[in-house]
Length: 225
Image (tube, rainbow, N blue to C red):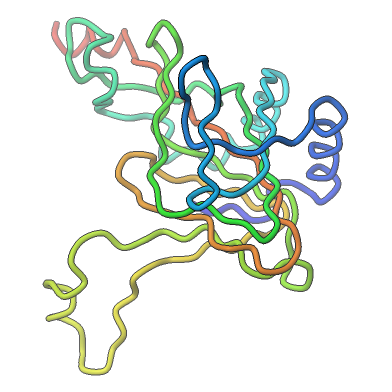
């Protein structure tokens, strides 16, 4: 899902200024090693990051998003909640907000190679993420070249789709979402391979977080009555 002009250029500049006034950019890691230290691999992920925990800002972003989320605000089945809700093992769930941890990225001549986003769950396991929000805080065709969020086709490109294609018809191997200021991108986390393509000119600034879901206990009980 792509939502254009969700935030104004002034909004985006304000968010960046606020975060930069409170914290400093650090090298983005690819995981945690002993002692809770970040593991860095600049051949795979190369960018600067600020981890910013702010419930108020997360709520502000969510309020702007809510009118566009009708199609995903309720899930009939939530597989990641299987072991957290009784009596159903695969309960319905509802969207309750954003993860308060906001990951701001500054990417200049850098990239993030193919990966799938991991899920996040609160310590009590009651709230679990199923979707990612990526908000682009700058970017126009003039000031920024490259840096698309690229979604890669899964499966065998020489399989059934190739056989169905008309002669000479190219088979699309990926889909690009270009960074444009104020644009919001929402996508499923499980199994969706994507990458942050090389930023060739300019600096790409984004913020990423998770859409959090909670099992609907009342509906779960109703299903078994």
